[in-house]
Image 1: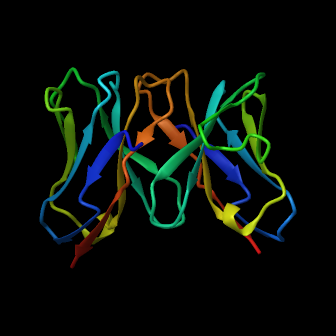
Image 2 (image 1 turned 60 degrees about the horizontal axis):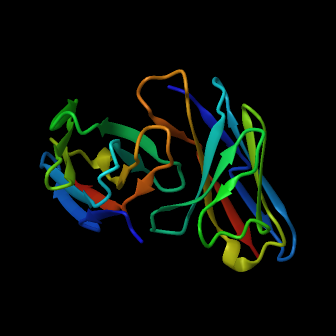
Length: 117
Length: 112
């Protein structure tokens, strides 16, 4: 199946710094990617929909100035957590759908675990 | 607001037994219902998915049963194995082009 890659898989940063997480579709082009956040032992919560060449659409309650999303190419979307604080520590997962496939399957990256000290 | 309700929260099944996880939804616009398996520290992986035009779909040991009138769907894992121990999420979306709404997840433990 299609592959979605995330980098880094884990990152530790100091409070107040910014962290960038990359999400790449390795063998297909994705006009839309989705960013989810998952707290320990909890479900995946949609943060935003990333659209190639246009602004991301954020879910209610998600601060767009805090979580900057850029989808500059058909294979790359980035999530930047700005001025990170300990409460931003979480597991961030991106996903994308291969438009050439006919199953509608949403492929997920391996996730990026952010720990803010 | 949780658009997909999932139960039970946790489940313990003996090896060889049947694991059953249930989900319910309210939004009649949903027409794509996948199940995902997630191991600790990993992203979710698609197990099996169904659309409302069929009432059941089977792939290997995994079966989805779908009841459109009741707005419920369930995952059955036959001959459960210790390697099936993971967290399972049901999800739904209006169609395959939209983001998924996830249930809260079920932690499955299959004992030897």
